[in-house]
Image 1 (tube, rainbow, N blue to C red):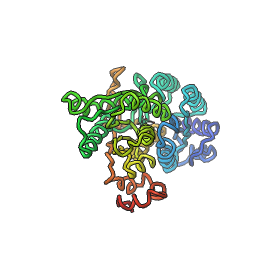
Image 2: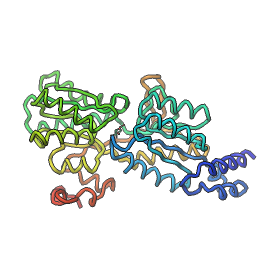
Image 3: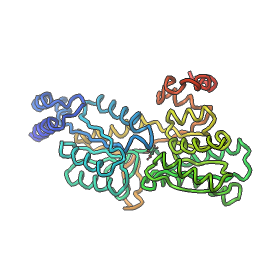
Image 4: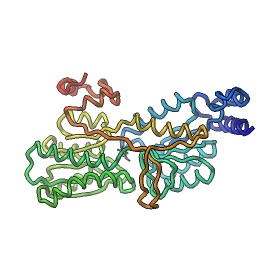
Length: 372
Ligand code: BGC
């Protein structure tokens, strides 16, 4: 009986939701309610709503996360709706409200800040909707699950990467500038903990000199350019830049180019974007951090699909919410540092294609870098 009720509810909700996935057609679902047990499971499946943050702070959200999540939901035959808030916090809440009204039973979010993230999670929970924080932990948000990378490790790799590149350049007492991610993104805090854990001992030992250190609101690449321009004006001898992702790194590289300093001043990054990898091939960027988004999307989708099917999945680990003190069940994946000699790994993994990376002037550089 109960299964039947769930199925009908799912069918009714599927009709109003108008989702794109297979298996969400209301006719099929309704029929399944009286069918064999194996089919009943699919019939009982709810719907997953995913809210991505924007499409400008990193190419990853639209080119990788959306694609891999879609593939996973389609393969499972679970109804889904993926939307992008385009950096607008009000829009973020509106999308969440609409998803809940339209029958989402699982909500997976990449928050724009913890405050609006929490409001959305609270609303979802009050309506019995299961919640997952995807990539960014919503502080004090109380999501049931969290899926991400080990973000402190991402920062450690960036710090170590910068040290490696400065050592190769035989930099003497280099002045290091830090261009941090958004102050409202808990990940940016974790990245900074990671790289400051590497850089601070160098500053303390007077091996490196601490230069300007600033956060970039909303990871806004244009603002990052303005901020770095000011940094370089005030401190023309900046010799290394710890940029928290490829977009911020590219903003710094653009300014360095204007000053004929590109290639001389190592710059870090993150996300293994086509632009970041091309900057590495060109010798303008020291390193990036590759996060296999397919694995992250698969882990997030796996939890979401289980929840949509009424199961209570277990996560492999947990993280501490530093604001509420709660332990949040979590899946944390391992990031990888990428330098010129292993850009080819990112291509081999299928994250970027040779076609998109090795265009024009980069063709010869790709060959040199052993990219097949
Ligand atoms: C993500 C990074 C991304 C940044 C800007 C962070 O929360 O972990 O991969 O570059 O946001 O979108």
